[in-house]
Image 1 (tube, rainbow, N blue to C red):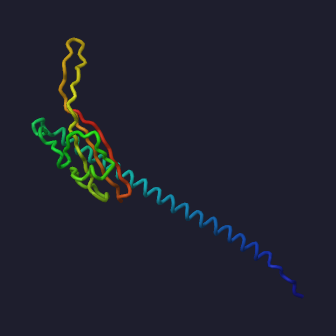
Image 2 (spheres, rainbow, N blue to C red):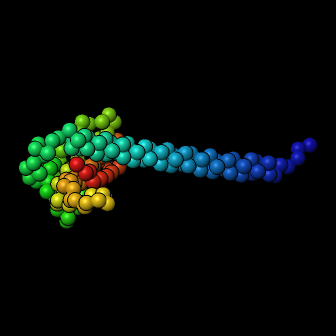
Image 3 (spheres, rainbow, N blue to C red):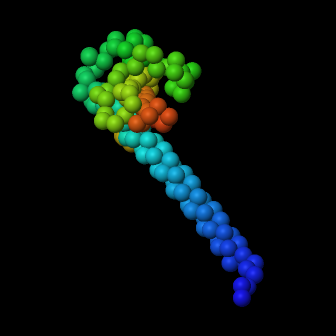
Length: 162
């Protein structure tokens, strides 16, 4: 004698398979998103490190150069500029003629820097006996680089006293 089967077990199995499939697809999508975020973070970190390297190269140039060698160098060419308070280093126009550092491994293009000679600032020595003016030169160093792709870009700036 044959019993009539209603197929409820089949329906339950199909429902369970559907739920498991949704969970698996969601997990795969989440893993893909996390991989993209990790790659983006690596790209940003690489950009930051390359920019710091260019900043260090510019500071080394200033340390190694004598006052005589720097005199007259800041003529708005080859990445050596006179001070311009309106210069926007986030725009590409400010980076038309920069100095380039040696290209680091795994970055998309060479990192670059610009050195600006700031106006003369006379300081007062902190001696309590006789105040005297101290003649120091200040330079604003700005460096820019991208990471492994051109999607991550970093601009860093520092002021150097010589």
